[in-house]
Image 1: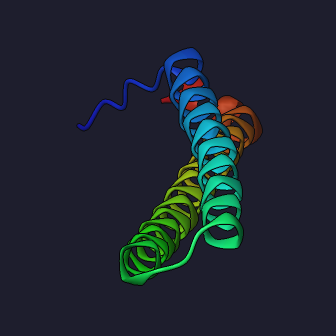
Image 2: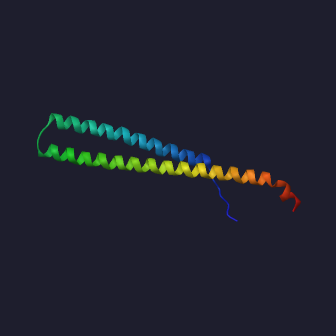
Image 3: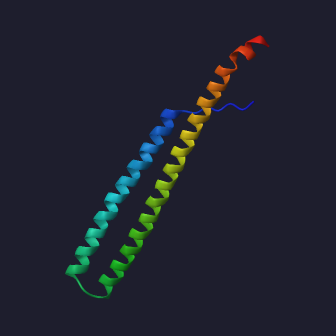
Length: 104
């Protein structure tokens, strides 16, 4: 028989940390974007263009990372929800059949 040891508090803490990391990343990406815009508007030249391109690539990669982390958090939440639903259904089944079980 398999035993499932599920720690809801630890799971919720992990989700909260992942969301906080995503929020911090979003804040930093926005700040980097603002800096790049300021540099690009105040400067000219190939080096500035290269910096703006590299910065845009970093921002795009960060946005993809944040999107992936959001998808993972959504998936984990769905798993939590399904585990909770399955546990509630098992309890309801046991409760509904307790008369039969105790007669054995």
